[in-house]
Length: 89
Image 1 (tube, rainbow, N blue to C red):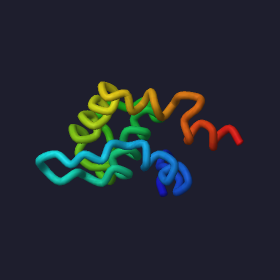
Image 2: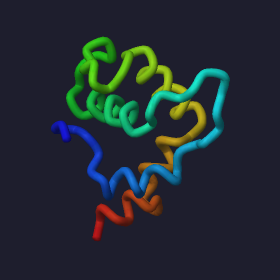
Image 3: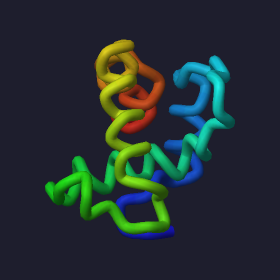
Image 4: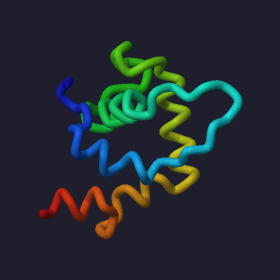
């Protein structure tokens, strides 16, 4: 596990909150993409500098923006979300 990667507990908490609607092309591994998103957010690096292990930067950037528009990030970071509740214990 790399520095900014989700722990198993964090992943199990976040996974049910993610949309599960398959679109045209098969989805890239959600956990890998989320680790890439969190890498950018935590490191402050540009999207283009995402390490290859997380997948293509455009995929990670597009998934972040789609999540923002769909309100996924708001649901994850509200004080009552399962992730935040568990982290405060």
